[in-house]
Figure 1 (cartoon, rainbow, N blue to C red):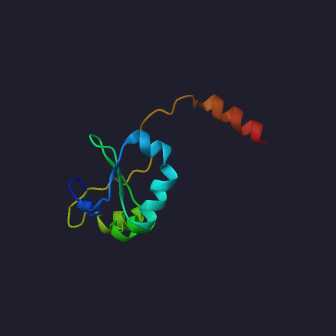
Figure 2 (cartoon, rainbow, N blue to C red):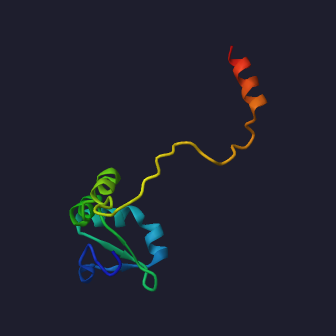
Figure 3 (spheres, helix red, strand yellow):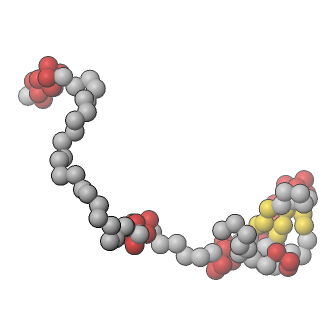
Length: 106
């Protein structure tokens, strides 16, 4: 969402200095709820908005499962391997170790 603003940045009542914001955080949070977004910092600025305003302006995102289903590749001629076994060696698993494990389970 780079370059997309969720709030109108020209409507800030004031810009708080970092040191002042540290000392008056409770007031800034109250003002964000009552009056709207509050900007903190000049060179590297941050915006404090109420959760209510954030939820109103932020786009809804579907759950990951729904997104994966909606974006599964379709129409491609994918070759799906049928073999379920693995050709790779499993570390620390030998026939003796498996026999020992089975004997412990009994």
